[in-house]
Image (cartoon, rainbow, N blue to C red; front, side, top):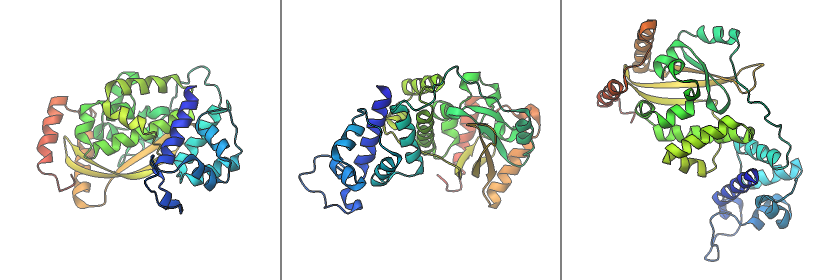
Length: 307
């Protein structure tokens, strides 16, 4: 039943955001009482019967062909991440997903650990299922946090970004980043609907964060393979980084992220300062929370205008 609800809510949210005008249908008038498309309009655009689409959106038993599912995705203007999520939800809905069985403990093989540590000019970490931090190098621990020092169940990037006050201070665009991490987590949850650890993480975040509850209810999904982030680092001040993501060959659900400074003098200088500080293993531990907060506040006053 929970899987049916997920599918139903996702389709309804996607339908509500598509305006009739954007797909060539008559402009909305006073007779439209709900935002977005009607069910019969989605069915018309997809070339399926209204009854079949209605049954699908209501979570009732129906197994559309891949072609029909693709037509519905096109009618709803789904992007690649949303199409993948719809396919995951359909597999769960029809019972085609693989049973989770015994919980899998993800580990990084020794060769990948050595590979990660070989990056001395980039901050690197390997993410696993649900955003678990599986491995980090020393520059990552200096830039973000010493995840190795955290209890095992707290080594999760989404959890840290949403719940840790230090992360809120660190990210200039914290709300955007946290909302994106929520959308990435929902995509992962759809891919592994029986994962008990994911359910536990979602439950904890929903209980502790009003922001997360609102973002989770939006049913947005997202994937990120490259981008840019802005920091107010407690040690080096304003810092902008570019990142790239790489799927690890031979390892399911493991992704390597590499961070490097933006290509301007101020960010390059800040990065060199961070690297020189982090090169001493005795200094890798981050400052105490109060000290970090004070330093972040001080550096904010000298921000280069990247607020």
